[in-house]
Amino acid sequence: MTTVSATLSQKTIHYMDELVDDGIAKSRADVIRKAVERYVEEHAIQAVLRAEKEPTLEGDLDELVRKIR
Image (cartoon, rainbow, N blue to C red; front, side, top):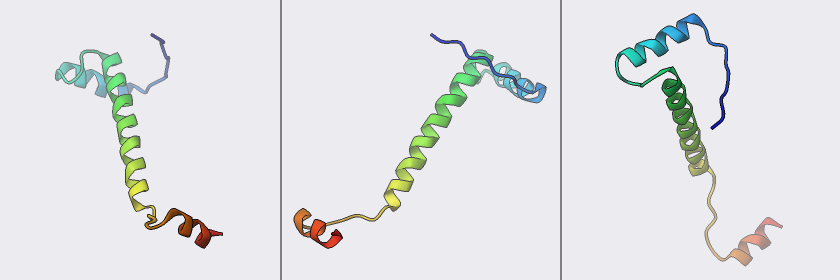
């Protein structure tokens, strides 16, 4: 496992401690792990939503290629 160091404001530390005190996370490190996991999940969801907006092509692949050229 790798350790990462980051400078955080006292306000952020306070919020992290509240999450621990409320039983939402086991420790400050757990808060950070959960936050990163949430960020990665959100990024993946946004990528899927962007992909859904992309135009789709239907039909014979050879014919579609001829239209593109």
